[in-house]
Length: 191
Image 1: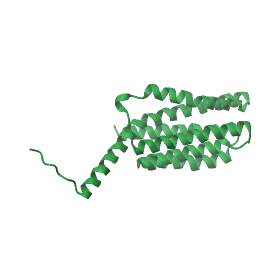
Image 2: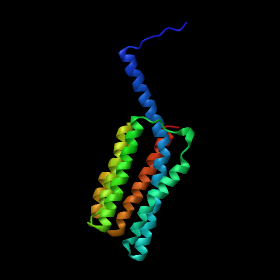
Image 3: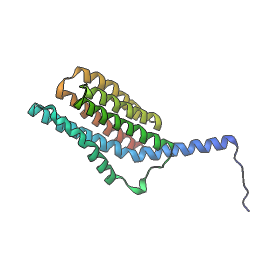
Image 4: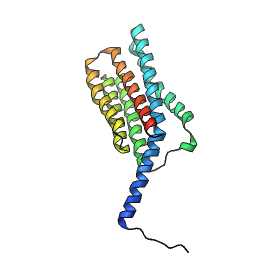
């Protein structure tokens, strides 16, 4: 005969903490491939745009950035494995909202910079990207992600002011490499 045992407050809190930590580990493990995917995509696309701009002298090649979400989300849909689905909870919801906000601000500010108010969009996007990655690290309690985001955001913003024209695209190349390396570190850490 099984007895119903009521948990003490401390046992209940310990169970909640363990559940949240397990959830973080699963989310980190499943998102490692997304960091790698978006990092590689960012690196490749920034290099393509850099070389096209550098060889033609035309900044219009920056319009290729608008293809990135379609390529990235399409590839992510193919890469996602249903058996490795991440848990749906507050942590995954906050992560999704953080990256959705990054995407929204990036696309809207880029469109405004192209069609209405010229601005240093590289500085803004690299700062937003670093912030989104740093926030992800904080939510997931992952120092490698948080630190990589800080480096990308702060270092990228300073470099965006110092670099001119197509050379600024190399910041996204470095940012993409940083994302991909972060994904590899996570993948190795949470096999």
